[in-house]
Length: 307
Ligand code: GLN
Image 1 (cartoon, helix red, strand yellow):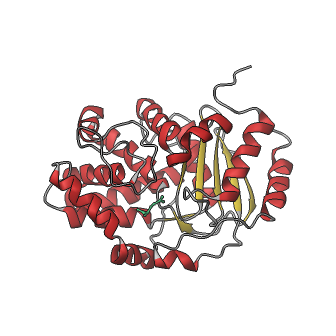
Image 2 (cartoon, rainbow, N blue to C red):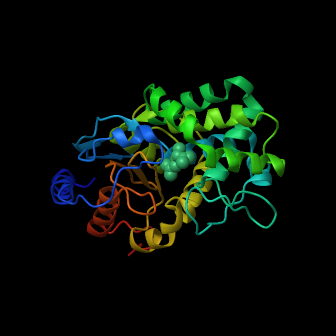
């Protein structure tokens, strides 16, 4: 589809590997062990071609990128009315770990921690003890393979995640969560510790770009209705308090995670997955951001530019 693509990705990789600004996440102690030099890029087209450069098969934790897929799973499993009754879809303009709720005491959107914890709570209410298994299996179906969990990262965040614990108890206070707050937090921490590679992320993003059908396995995972809603919140809130800059400059629905990953999903065309653990002040991967910007500019991929 894009003949000069492989060369372009190689040039991007070479150019941006020289940028060592930003720093690996350190508020989850285990994440400080990440190798800041790692840099992988992968792009999957909706017709099933996968391109890879650099450390594209190095595993790292998915972190907040899981939020997009768990939101999709909640919509698919519980329907939009139930989901929308407890979680908003408004950008918060604040950091991912903000503890502030909307005027009617809901999380602003499913891409910030409060909304994602509420989403995990909905799945937990529906599935009980099977909640994490369902999430884990679903993430694997998006990636087209079974994914592992980094138990050390899970334990590390569980031991230190008091801010998320405070958010969850606030949600309990407003009946967004039920009585099983600790169990829901365990689901949330564990979903953030699922291991992926840049290649996995590209395939997962390409599945969103392909109306919910995995372009490698051919499996329909979620409906196109759910995909449209998921891509909408990724567009408005996927990059936290950088979301406005992102849609202006890059113009592709995206989601980042503090493990250093970014996905970008261009409907009907492609999915991009990047991995580089050095983050900027918003918690977005510095090099990943640059790759997305360069790709969008070079191939004219901004979704609002249809010339
Ligand atoms: N597990 C992380 C947290 O809740 C995820 C945050 C992120 O990737 N932005 O803080």
